[in-house]
Length: 213
Image 1 (cartoon, helix red, strand yellow):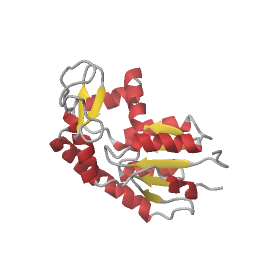
Image 2 (cartoon, rainbow, N blue to C red):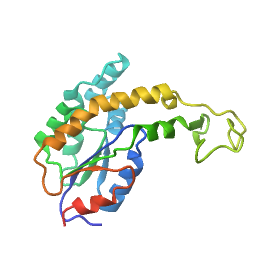
Image 3 (tube, rainbow, N blue to C red):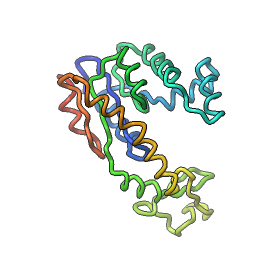
Image 4 (cartoon, rainbow, N blue to C red):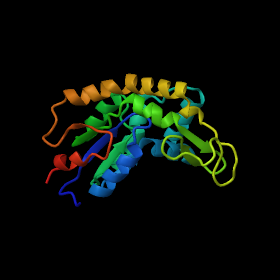
């Protein structure tokens, strides 16, 4: 689908909500550029840019990257693709970041993947990985032939720390605490006719109805 004008969109959702899958389908369907804050952060750290070194220092010390630093990082990349329609993933995560984004760009759409936390916990805690190859199994819908062992090598499978129940619960609670104010910020704004908070756990086909003709 060719869009008649430049579209600015943000996608939000907790870890394990399927943001990567949904983002891929949205960008393919509408021709938007997928902008991942995580990818930008890693690229700047690897390139040892000024902001990258500052962020690495924060991360190495176990500190959160300050909002103003994260905002400068993302906005620098967005300015480099002015005139391009994009879907922003992983930013903003705080109200301060949302305000910084609003100071420069007017959003058309905010997509919120509102997947029940219990569904996410079940999905993530069922994952087991063959570390040498990266093959991932799910005990619910893609189990190994022999429980606990890789199909191809017979080597043992492991559960990543991020997929352990207590870790998943902590990450989801952290996301809820940090991000709910951002959703409230967008809900309270005077949104244009094509701007919505779209709550769905599957590909948001309803997004078609909020893209301007």
